[in-house]
Length: 361
Image (cartoon, rainbow, N blue to C red; front, side):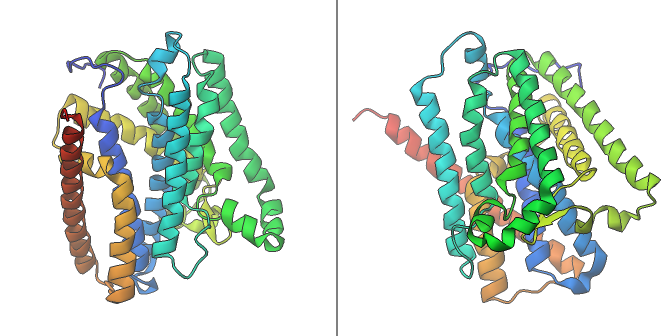
């Protein structure tokens, strides 16, 4: 992975491997949702483990990528002494606010029997972008990056310590609980955004292909170590494989999952390894990954849309039930082809619109 002959890129240039990883994260969430909504408990442990594994990897992958990608174009300029302009700050606030609004809109359209103002992954990502701005003012200092990672780990650990108190607090504060402690609650999940932000800042400063490869190789080694910790822990405790991928080992707050203890090693291990693997496959070996890149570049739109297809149309309107693995796999393949096609069309339309805006009046 270190011996790279790829051409050097400017820090601001879009890296296809990150789009591919984001596309893979979207695939995991789609598999999670089809497993939940297109099958039922009759499918037994394989379905249960599929739902758990796709969430345990997909959720931290999405959130980590948010932080990791934010400083890619900004960090080199800031490191060189450029000030943080009002335009940059406004861009962060605008992007975060749009995602929060998109999350509420998704609740309104797809989850019509629940209050639209409930928390969700899009709301947490949006808030994470907004709360990434203050650290980015000082991350050009190495000590600040170490401090941010330390603070993020403490932020997550504090939730672990206080989770029983939080659970006891919720029944008397139902509205606040469903806003701030529902699906992927900001506390503790924003910690993953902050960790991604610090590591992404350092990655953005790697100005050659060789340096980027070495950096991601080190992340991959760290990821393998995390996975080894997870596997060793379960082996030492005699945990069967099907119970290694089970929700009961983690925190359940407001009937929603949050990774606990050794599960965080599974999440970070998978994230770090996937980044290294994707860089090697996409940027070094140039393996075909256009379909994943399309999914990654249209992830927000497709995340929204697939809820309407998988839940609203297929489950609620058509009553689709696929308690057969072959039919389930075929339906997912058809859905994937459809989403890639829609994503390609979306990118083409946006490209045409962008070219028209650039044309002189």
